[in-house]
Length: 472
Image (cartoon, rainbow, N blue to C red):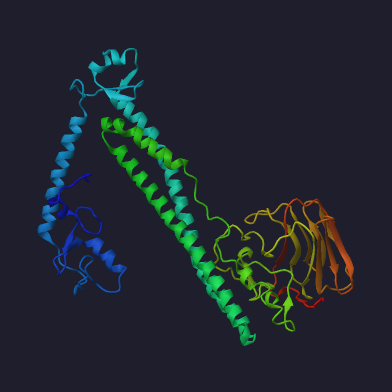
């Protein structure tokens, strides 16, 4: 449509889409709208009402406004005639009023035969206008495919963002419920502590939901901009040769600017930090409940859990449920391996934790893994584990170590000892204190505890009993 319209011409524009009416219908309040615009507007509303005056409509299918439709069609015909007249004037040289038949390769603009012989274009190279237009159209058209690919990528990221936004809500609701269940086990004097933790959860939900909303709004803006650029490019490719060549540089620059922008990415850390709110909850208030508190040295991070894994409410046990959960594909989550990490990694000090594996003929592994290992594809190296499979225990760390261990009776628990100073990972049977295997390696990054399981029997981090002593 024209860039500027007079006030009388505004009567031809739909108040919803701000474009010339298409199949206008009229409501009982005398306001008119495009039929499709009105129906889409009503789909999002609970009641049928006028978008302008909010008066309720008694008809789901209001009558057509034939008079307005005829006026709009006449108006469109007049606009078409004006545009054709303008296009004809653009085909003439502004200096010599001659038809633009040539394209100056040096100045990159259409010229007439008089311009060709002028001193301004002396020694310049020229091509017929049609040939030059076709060459430049092919060049500009090549940008359409990468633009469409960018648009498709934006749409995929938008879907992931929508899934993440929904999961944030689910996580927040589930985490709030679990927090309340744990606090119900405590005495009433812990009410203030409960309220403080729920407030922190809700604040994180608000901030992360707000962050995701902003990201989604930015994606919608990026998607709309890409769509506009594609549409504008397609329209430019349909214009006459002279008009195209006069405007193609601006169109090409607009396309280049869009392609220079980085592709949007989901980004890590978008989900609720469930481990922060639920992990070691009773330990954090041990000074108020010393006789009942326990401490778990490793809290499992549900944001890393492969979708077949189900974690316990206190994030200390995991089973393989067999059914894949519908979870967002956030960067932290494993997809190739049925693995879940601990919520905290270590790059200094000494650490140990017991994992209850039980006496079962299953397929599981426990150990430590590097922070930078890939989580969506096969892991070639960077983890050290005890692996139980086909009735045998193995010390496994690709590509160098795959050793079958000599174990006299089935293991009930495995103690993992990480010594970052001595750069060793030791696996011990805590029931016999026997050393199962020790890995020595030059660790260069943070190591995270991990559990990998293909069994429905729970694999659990053992809690520790906490005692307190006051020193005078």
